[in-house]
Length: 275
Image (cartoon, rainbow, N blue to C red; front, top):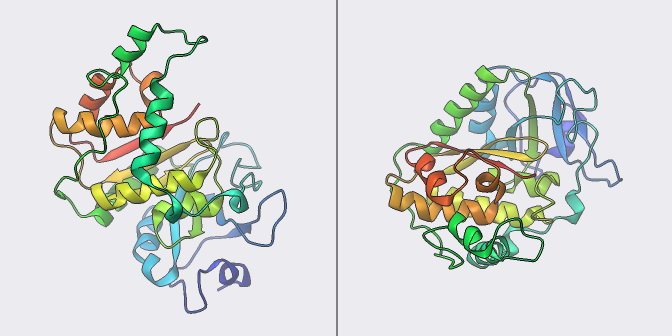
């Protein structure tokens, strides 16, 4: 095991039992002594993500399939050039998730003078709730094993996007990896990635979600217990809209919460993209 990987390992009693391909530890470009992540030099090999995910309890390193703003750019932004801010992110444990989602919902459903939509059109986007926050969706019963679901998604993702590189983050759980690494993808909507990770923790617990991939401004989660009916999916869609309004505003047409919810029924993967 290299000295760099030993420095990244979370805790003195941690050990990595899975052989790694050539790669390097990445430090924030603005300085700092703490490494943000480890990044492979080449695209990830099939099956390696699953092996590292299964080794997480031993190593404390959560694997991510990392996409870049431009896959052909040698800097592989934001990962390869250290375009991350780990020291500026709060602890996910310090956030009240219901309060976060309610506040983001209020912000996203409020009409202002620069809005291209009328107040009625704005409320129609989030029908049947309008501006009224419905609260968090109830936790469904698990329908699949969270780890196996994540492994399957990683395999499927690599099959269609073979240029993705492998990243490792010293995080106690996958949900914490964006905050620990200092990822800034949603900065136009959420400046503190600690708040993002707090919501991901909550979804891990309620939906068996696992973070599989991250890009310049995207996240991909596997979901072991997706909503089974459209009624259930509407409440989940409201959480997604609060968390990432662009999923609805700039997603697949029609750009309404009602239509977006239809696509969540039985879907074992959730994708988020911030403009």
